Image 1 (cartoon, rainbow, N blue to C red):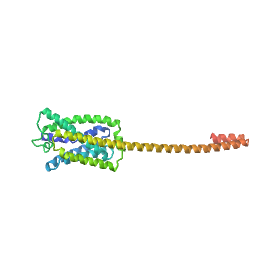
Image 2: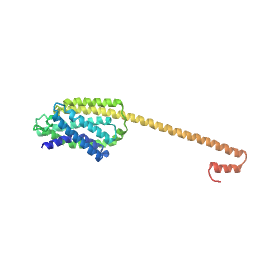
Image 3: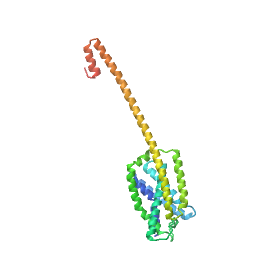
Image 4: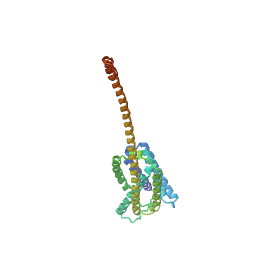
Length: 288
């Protein structure tokens, strides 16, 4: 039974991976999938071990920071983009997972008519006090995450999110903003992960709203910069094309004037044979 519970706890750590793989499934390869899954299993296993060895250390250090880093790194490799653009996404998905888990935990607790506080530390070490409702909630999360990922896929395709993330460029201020809020997120969950799953719902909602706003700001800001850059590029290309046309027009005018002068000379000299020959060979470019 303990092995089953451990497996379920490891599965819940891969929900961010599952969401992104469904959302960007056109970019997923077997190599990325295997490496990503392996890193998630290793990360969650080490988190389980570390939580038992150092129970005084806040759970956020073992259960949030590593999995967010793995999600950020692998998603940036998946989409060939910069990691700083994927860090807010990874944090947002981590908060979303905890919100869905908290809601499922409330439902599981109501169905089982349990009075358990459903503390996360009850799942650490898988002792006899482990709360089965926590793992029931993890199972109930799976179809919800799959459905959300499928809905997200349609929207991501419509807005060409992958293309935007690949073309976007970041500034120093973007690094500072994202890293600052990541630190705030970790500090908040240092305390929140010691609360009951029910109480974590409010923290998850606050985190989703916060990082939703940050993500929207980065997207709109970068999209604006991209539009400006595209507009400047289009203007530059248009100016270059116009300059090319003006140069061609000037050359044509010069050649046209030369042709008229030459024909005028033949007419003034009443040299019809020469005019005919010139018109045939030089103007019409035909053999004599």
